[in-house]
Length: 166
Image (cartoon, rainbow, N blue to C red; front, side, top):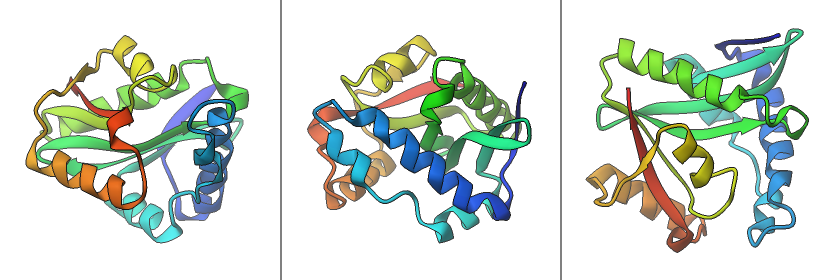
């Protein structure tokens, strides 16, 4: 049975491992190089834990997925969400997003927002099925995030921002 709860500092290494293993889903796509990217650094993960912006989904006491988010323009911006490939297809990611929605509502946020790849089946098409819609006009913070992505080498022409009201 899957339980969703706040991540603990002692789990930072496990969260990084989940991110690394989840990235292997990009192998065999035009974005295979993502599988070689370094996972989120430990300092950022520790900050998100302290801010209440990192949740894990655990099974039998072991984290198998996580979602990391922060406030951006009165919305919960989902920075990263990853599920172990062995646990894909079980609605764990959807469950994590539902918990973030509830937290966002409790914190007075307006929506969930995220940036993702347009064509990868487990990216934008997946989020559309979960009620997210494409953002056509970027807000100032979204434009800043896009510039951060470009500075990291992401192809922003293959990406879009999405939003789901809470």
